Length: 137
Image (cartoon, rainbow, N blue to C red; front, side):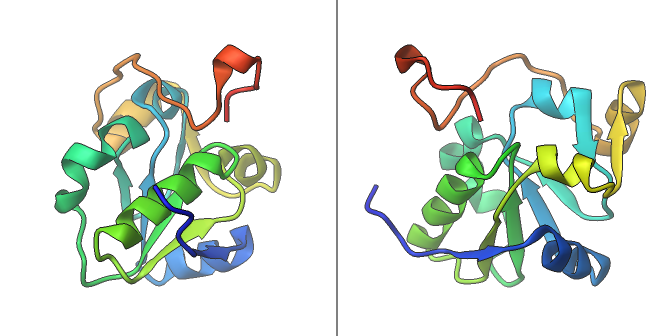
């Protein structure tokens, strides 16, 4: 995919938007979400590995903020959505790692299943080249 320009948003600005009802699209894999999830009112868990086949489930008429663990997959997801005609998509500059470090709301362990109502598949896709020894994002 070509390098499509996507607006990025800080944690603080993203959180303010979430408090106003904006939807977070968490593109981490189910196994990552089952360990630690964003504790927000409107979260759609749609792993990057499923995005191409499921993106049409996302609303086109409202703002969406994509997020992952550190920001790489989030940006790829936002670029993909923009290429499919979603024009109200922004990517969170960083992800769950800094979200948790800065004390923003999370849910972990058994409470994740209750709050996200998601399965815990163990598939993993990544935006990095793990064969080259890169750390997973």
